[in-house]
Length: 246
Image (tube, rainbow, N blue to C red; front, side, top):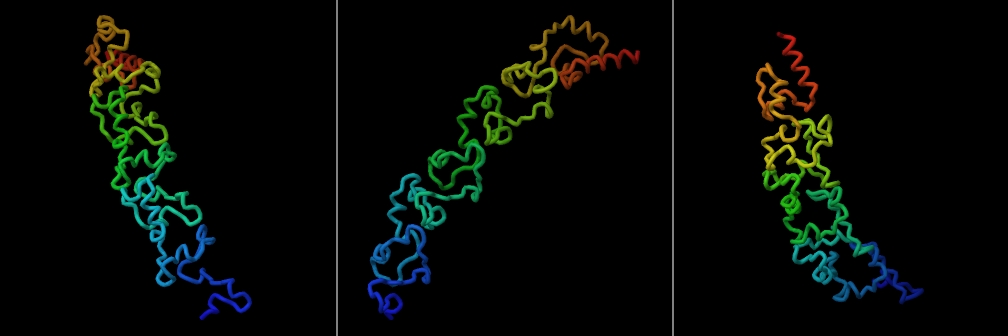
């Protein structure tokens, strides 16, 4: 039925409407000559991208599609308008990109491929964990669940809430009075702490000042029992209460 494509006015000016088929021409497909897709004929021509772009799939190295077992459904990442401008939406995976992860090149996290890439922080940040010294994570036996303290916006801006969980060191009288965790946690042991080494106390003066105070002893746990907020005022309130009961 020649009239599907030809007219009596201009036999050579074919007006075949590809948009009426199951494969509409868009983007870079529009100016192509028919023979570029129909070199093997016009019957049963495949409509999937991979059939024409297999050489592209096999030849690309960054990332290597074959080695990483990428899907042959090219439209998951590519478009007919700009084949090289990949539109893969990482936020649709089980690891949305946030903070400092957003501008990274794919190879920064996928150096070993794109299949079964770990999503835990430690897998990429193990060197950071092993090399940090303030505090020394390895020596202290810190957990490897990095997101407990760190975030993707600023790795060095930790969210460890020492003030509310344990003892105020970022506020109150101990603010700016220390430089390293080991100032209070001797030998990087976070199960214990020392007050005596920092404060300019001597045992004789402290013994005299706490004379008659029940439970007093010259050691750090005892200091903490009476000064849980690191404030000297608490000591005076405690003394006044004891003296007032005499």
